[in-house]
Length: 353
Length: 176
Image 1 (cartoon, rainbow over the protein chains, first blue to last red):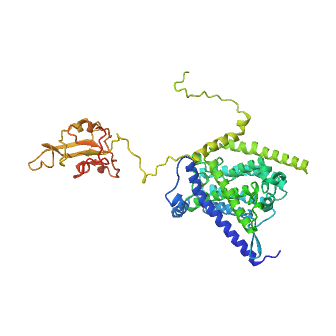
Image 2: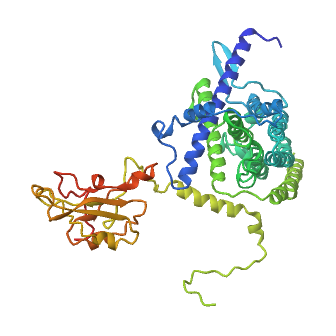
Image 3: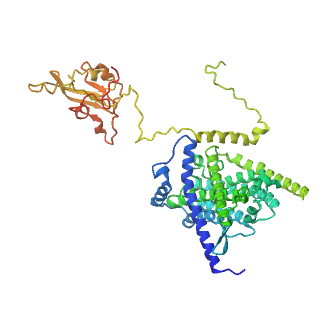
């Protein structure tokens, strides 16, 4: 396939848009986190910077940039800077394979709303996410501080443990869909649920793989280092965990990477299990293709925001796990469960085909 | 053991049932509790715009009253200083001279009347002790400061300003 220069421009526009949108959403997630936590605790939350605290993220950003940047004398300077950069980089890289919407027909050309639809997208996501742990590990190691090192150790062992269960839960999904391209998986979910015509556009994988979804979601919480799995930054035991020594925008990068990760994993969950940009009864509306796409994108983002809210809702409901409980859940419960899920899926596929 | 409040529960460590071991129902229950709070009325008071009403018996900064003709009531009898459990009040008495009748009601007056606000415990015993209706505790807050000397309130800060009457904001005796 030859690549036309106009297609490169298309892709560049989409990349910049995706990048911008994920940064803006991560920015406002910080505000949303504070607002949601406040509302769940019968408070109001930040409301002084603009109406409903709408400029709070800007104020926080300015504050982060104004703070003194301290690199500890005993720290490894190069690695100390590399840590947060790597965290941020891997957080932003995953968004490349997520299909944000159907195709747009503009100027006589068909533009898919996806940076790239590679046929091993699921593997790509896993590869990038597992590099993400290096950001935390390197940062914790370079700080030359016991608390940071313990936090980094916890992060790495936790992520490695939960990646296995996550991968195994995805295997069952790939067995039913028969493809690793996320775009293809999303298109498949536009059909009829269990072959019932009234449930058109509802063939979401969550109805075929409920156990797989549950395992995937729990692992996504662990991968994002969110409560109840936020042991790496466990402020009660480890001061600040891996980012104890960090200040200014380097700390900001770590915190920001966490929110981008949350956004991306919400996007992946809604793409893989909740039908992505599909919404029910899309054909009944009788709209032009472009309008359908735009509404689909809206639905996709609604799903993502609902998942982000769920992340926060869980955070302000559940207490943190103890470390042995975390390992027990990962190795003794989630991994056997996901293997069981694979076996059941395989049996059902064998019997129905 | 007999429980007085009848609220105590006997703790028994027993094996969890299968559904309890799943944890998911318990997590769901917890989520329902938190989401109920999401829609509840918030307890926050937007402080500078909204202020909470003081209780009717609130005891704040002291005031040295004047009578209807603007003369100071205090006669420097020292009963307030004697009654003060924190020993916060210091009074220097002086005799009223000719031509000062419009300033002081009694023949003897307080040349200096100091309350150490760091010692004061705002108990209101000075107000109870005063036979001349002179000292009262108002609804005003005693202001904070970075300097210890600022907390010794002299007559300049305590005496009711001239021309003001007993208006409720600055002066409200807590008993009639």
